[in-house]
Length: 118
Image (cartoon, rainbow, N blue to C red; front, side, top):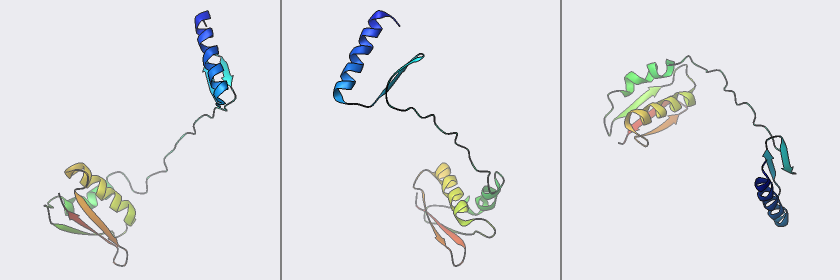
């Protein structure tokens, strides 16, 4: 570290200490301050419940021809109803834009009703 850089660092650390701040400054191999640095955890996805494309291949033929004001009633059958609804919502947003559909889940009959609004 150059002398001018060391002076700037010392001024910054003096200011932080005067403010009562908790901090950690790491420059190369040196570290200053008392804040504990935690390394981020690896985020891992759980394996998919259904093979890729299974849900889309199921509901897409029922949704493809929807026009504004049309309603599709999709029976969840063997699929997890929330996973199916999520896939329908994502597909609708991609095809027609965010907010283009309104959906509701009827658990008693295990169906998803989708209204195209835009």
